[in-house]
Amino acid sequence: MSASLALARKYRPRNFSELMGQEHVVRALSHALETGRLHQAYLLTGTRGVGKTTIARILAKTLNCETGVTATPCGVCQTCQDIDAGRFPDLIELDAASNTGVDNMREIIDNARYAPTAGRYKVYLIDEVHMLSKSAFNSMLKTLEEPPEHVKFVLATTDPQKIPVTVLSRCLQFALKQFPPERVAEQLHKVLSAEQVPFDAPALRLIGEAAQGSMRDALSITDQAIAFGHGKVDEQQVRQMLGNVDRDFVWRVLDAVVARDAAALNAEVERCFEHGLAADDALAQLARALQRIALAQPVQASVDAADPDAAQIQRLSQALSAEEVQLYYQIALHGRDDLRLAPDEQTALMMTFLRLLAFAPSNGAEPVREATPANVARTETPLAPRGRGVAGEGAGASPYPASHASAPSPSPQPSPTGGEGVTRTVDATQASAQVTSTGSPIPSGSDAAPRRDFDGDWLKLVSLLPLAAMARELARHSVLASWDKGLFKLALPQDKRPLATQKERLAGTLSEYFGRAVKIEIELTDNVGESVAVRDNRVRDEKQAAAEAAFMADPAVQVLLSEGGGRVRAGSIQATES
Image (cartoon, rainbow, N blue to C red; front, side):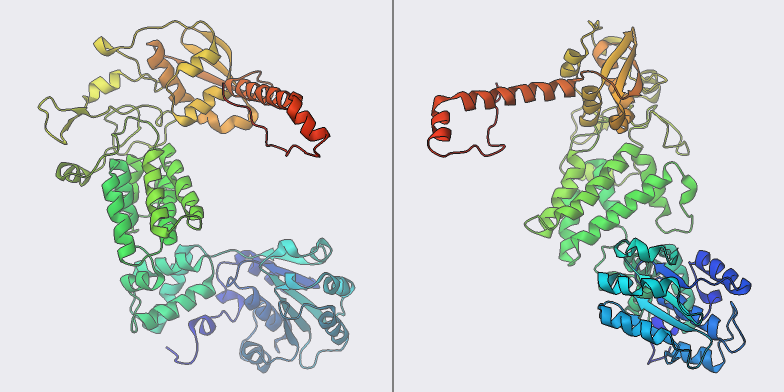
């Protein structure tokens, strides 16, 4: 490996054939060059390190190569070599971040009138063009729209929203793609193989994730990893360099969540900070793992068999319901936002993990428990699917049926022997008999709930049902359109559409309450009527209005307002709970 040249510079693409990940740009520019249909100005947008400046330099070579205007510059002529070396006089690169004024732009406009010094075209590359002042943009509009025949503009920016539409309309715009971690790892594999640097494949994946879509950043991190690892790229050393948690951290956390083992989560937090690892990275990796699990549930083919985490992803995609995965993902994201507000990072991470337990969907899971030798032994066994509806489903069954999140799994019952930490499970045949085709439990035998009749008062019924948080929101925002025996037809506002996913869970609670199978149908509409939520808001507003009226009618208040120069601060009058 060259001792004087960084990998990001050494492996910068020199022509379109070497440019990876931006095929849509290469195809359009190559066709334009081959047919002679060149635009006067191009706008390249995208995050840092995805190839904006590289494409501009390759375009300059295609226009000025001594072999002619071509999509495949020779790379060996004096012009190509000068452009690669950054000394070609007709490629003018301007950093708009440090040249923002109108005077800088006028200088470019004045020079654009003169013919090229050494090539066919003058190519103006203006980087971070969104940093130009409004007056600078205005001064270049006419030249940008009708430049001299020998001038081409290439504008590059990471923030196209800040560019005036008058400029955008004069440019041919290309949005460059970010590089996914897999693509980055693939490129790093080629680079390190060419450099004869030993490496671990998982380490390349870590670098790809840390680069956040930037190939230049990935190569820079790789340079750092080679130095840190004394000439090799080792997974553990890369983790230490980046401050990453170890690979199995997220799987141990999710296993503890499935087992509802708060003590195990506390141990993971302590281990994380004993090694000086960042809470933000821990939550980011947790969110990333949950995303992969969520995708594996409906699309099992998304799990690459060669992935070292494939077995963990497949196992947890069966152990967790889709609803749980989505909830945990949101908690992980919000936990990252809470880091700046918490007293310290360890507190924030621990509270986020405890939130995973506290807000877990009520699906028959065990209560949160402290780790005991028996619990630890049970946690180490393969995890059984939770929230899957009919017990005894095969491991290969799809984890994404419409009703899987609603069917409560049998709750573990204390053993008649009284042994600590020992549980017994309900027989699969018995559990299957207790679930209808819609996923609603039907009480049977001596444990059946008393059969109740419905008097048609939906608002009263909602107040009596022991519902989980999201199912309660569905009930509160719905209006009973009609009901007949076991069928409840509910009207739900269009803007509350996401709550419809709780239909089966609400049906299960109603089945338990009435002692018979209940089915729910939901109609989305713009005119629902008065739901529990609407009624509660109306009652609250009426109380607030009455409180404000009573306060303003008080003689003492009137004296203060009229004679004492007082005034009532908006929002300061609060109705008391009756």
